[in-house]
Picture 1 (tube, one colour):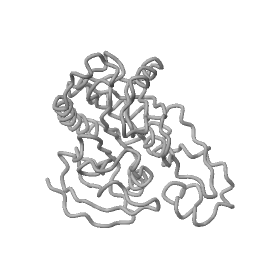
Picture 2 (cartoon, rainbow, N blue to C red):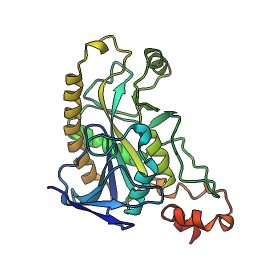
Picture 3 (cartoon, rainbow, N blue to C red):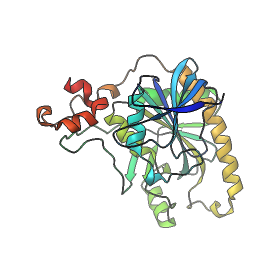
Picture 4 (tube, one colour):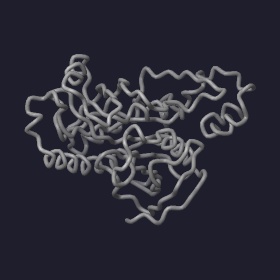
Length: 298
């Protein structure tokens, strides 16, 4: 169903599940009563209009991470606006879908990985909502939500999509891919897949007290593989398209099976993380972060 024309909004609780689509996934099939909205945040505009609708009986907000038409570089994405917009809409769980390269022989193109760890090699990104008079130090040893990750992995199995449970996603700045030397070091360090976006989202989602988990769609082997140079662009695109089709099926199943209650600590991540005396936090900062810290300053 085509989404209705985008309308502007400041805040509204219209969805409980957020889906952030990456390379190859720019729309969400199966949404009913779909409509587009433009969400304004204190951190600027999200990557695109957000599509709201009903999927498998649940209210869902879909956002194309790179914008429709894939026009935004990984380093140009306004991650803070994207996550803050989800928070404003009432989202509690964010499912990320992204294309990745494989760093291991047994992680093959066309297969999925649901990572439980990230490693940060980014350089030039805003990775926190805090600052300007307020400090928070959050626990981040386990950067993804275990409950949500389990639902995603089980949905892959149900839809007969080959999935690997747990693994480490190394996040690089990009937009260039790795050099051969970098790829070899990443392999020696034991990383599983490589991408350019998800860790930044995961950090901000944790600060916003949102559950976050990733479907990492493997499109190809990184440049380390001996057959890498024989892979053509058309083969990669074909894999990307197949991955997107499988991701749509997995997402529908996952949304259907999501329990109504969150059995995790994601929703209270800030409870012991705010170290600044809230009485001295500037009013402008409190206002900017109302959606995130409102329950702690009321």
